[in-house]
Length: 455
Image (cartoon, rainbow, N blue to C red; front, side, top):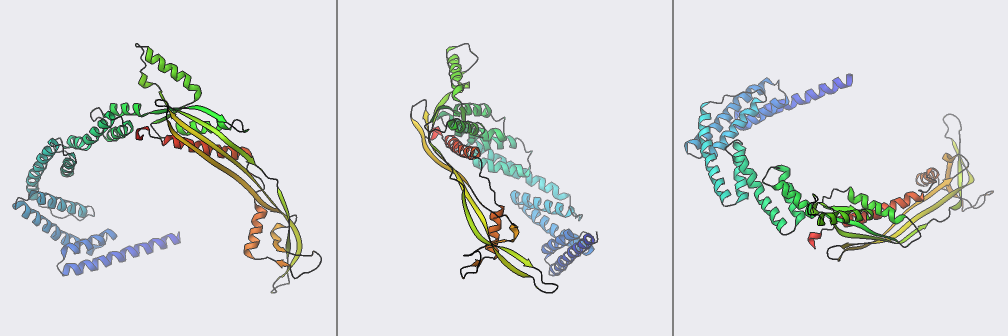
């Protein structure tokens, strides 16, 4: 609690000092006749410390002078019938008055200026409104939107400005969307109408046109053929499931996928819809298959070498206390430990292709080569592992010039990491799952990136 109080005290002192510095600078500006700059400094001083009486008094005086000057400039423009400048000068003065009032510094704002402002505002908004009507009539929507935005920034309730703003904003997008529809660019049409309906859902018939564009833009593919030319049976189904899951759960509104098993029922539904004039089912509402996806596993290998074992030479570090005030004695005793290493690797080569049902052409053809692996490298020692250090010795029972103890930080840390390393490889099932996910995701992303409207 004492530390918190101390911190708060220091913080208050710093704030108070900053407020005093601003006040001092404000006094200097005021003495030189720079009232606007003085008011700015007083404002900062009061903002830092609302209890700074000198700053409050100074702000009220310098602020009033600044406001009066702003209103004088407004009145000058009003008298000269410069309605635009008069409007913005008045709004600036009004904002300045409000900002000071927010920190409890209320200035005098003569009410007679309101009438002058109302007159200038009326004249200026009328001129802008007439200008916007001309621009809209000439279909200069971008310029019209800018003009209408300015009117709204001054008076958002002015006549039918908000409706006109919507028309100026969305009419060009609407027209572009309809043009896309007519030119069978359904995806671009969808995004045009989507933009409109997100901000103005009731704009004309944009909502129904968006739905129409989406329906026509949907590209449904069928997992038509799965071939596995390797002994790794079943992996083709695993990859296919990943493709199906990835496409199904994607955010793409256009790409849909059905399994081979679903294809028969879809064809029957389409036939019923086409042959039954009284059917409530419309052909456009069925999942029309537009692409056939074929996946072939050409190679799928698993390589797991045997566990490799190496006998390693090192030293057992013994620390012998020598009594109070005397550094301990360190002795190194020759010893042995074992290092183990092993790896596992799964590799595959998968080709896939997407064929257009309508044209019979090959629209996607690709091959993916993928490898995933895991390895282990660890050490084991039967004694106290914390006292084991690396090194080399030639003879276990006598000294040799070739003997070396590597009791340095880097080598010792490396050996300790080996002693703590994992001794288990990832299960084969995990690696197979990883590689299948990688391959299936790649195929799905490749398929989803296909845009038939670009071809």
